[in-house]
Amino acid sequence: MRWTGAFTFASGTYAFSGNADDGIRVFVDGAPLYDHWVGVSGPYDVSRPMAGGTHQIKVEYNEIAVGAHASFSWTQTGTNQSPVATITAPADGTTFAVGEVLSFTGKATDPEDAPTDPGIADAQLSWSVLLQHCPGGGVCHQHPVVGVTGRSGSFTAADHGDDTYYDITLTATDSGGQTNATTRTVRPRTAALTLETVPPGLQLGYVSTNSTAPFTRQAVVGGQRAVAAPSPQVIGGLTYDFSGWSDGGAASHSITIGTTPRRLVATFTARPAPTATITATATPTATPTAIPTATAIPTSTPTATATAIPTSTPTATATTIPTATLIPTAPPTPTPAATTIPIVIPTAIATPTASPTSTPTPIATATAIPTATPIQIPTATPPPTATPLALTIAPAPGGSAGAAPAGPYAAGQRIVLTATPSAGSLFLGWQVSGSRASPSGPPRPLSPSRIR
Image 1 (cartoon, rainbow, N blue to C red):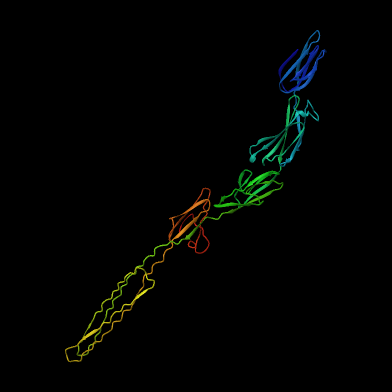
Image 2 (tube, rainbow, N blue to C red):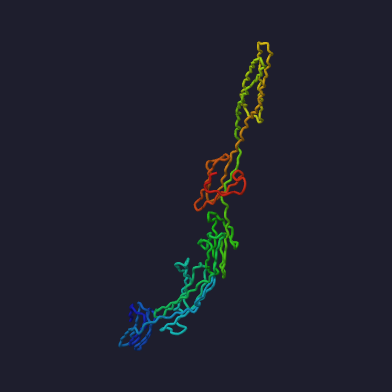
């Protein structure tokens, strides 16, 4: 005959009692509690802890001869106490480096099951190893590493970044279902890694994040860490290109973290500022024809003075000298040498008139008119041919530049130069070269918009 049922138990110790005139056996959750399958009368008493919850109870009875009876019951006699788990290795304060093997051991005692060492059975001990990853020291997430049963185990420390540590947990479970767990935290050994730039203030990458140098990170010993020097970069209006790392590595490369502090320096070189170059270009032009200007020559006025002889009244008549006027004729082409045109003014002659009287004839004295001084009239010399100038603008990467109005240009003409930086760039200045733009001295910087 068999009786079965599901019953709820509070956690604690229970006394199970059975009685039968022949054979009886009892099972709790499928495991034998006691077995007296013989024709001998009871009672039979057994004490054991029970975990809180629902349990399956099965009772079987064997009637052999006359006078059949069977009974079974249980009573809680005490509260089941939890076991006590203890981790004996690794020791508290143990640290790790990437690639090291970490071993763990432990045990547990239980007031009801195993109050003294070696404690409860290996099967009642379980281990869990979790890698805690807390990027940037913020919220952590977990990566399961090990899950084993028994008194010991081991694992190899992985390279999972700098903000990591391991939690090693031992859980003990007694026969009554009571559990107890203890955890040992193992943190990494670290070394300081300082990243710098020349000049300071540029960006450098460490692992997957860019930061303004200089900065220092605590890196796990034995780990591989990526460093990078982004290029080009703009700071203070200047553009910088990567030149090299102090360890000789490429712009982006990996390094192994040692046991001592380390310093890495990335050097950058500034690009020169954009320059504007003025180039003179000879352009053939028509030669203008010079037209000489006619110059009037002043007319000399002759003057005659007559000296009278007593008793004679002479009269001198002066002949007027005509005015000479020069009318120049413009030659079809200019003559290189100056042409001298002499102009001679004729001498005035006075004619005396004799008196009808018998007195001596007076003699008139004529005063000569000086000859006019020849005037040299130079032929007009044509002005020199103007040579047009060309302007070449060579902006550096990171912007554009232009000039207004468009060339070619004449000497002395005013020109507006304009520089327009692209997004993320800053205008630094102009550098002007060329014999016309800078006859002496080095190129000089100009403002973004410059009128020359």
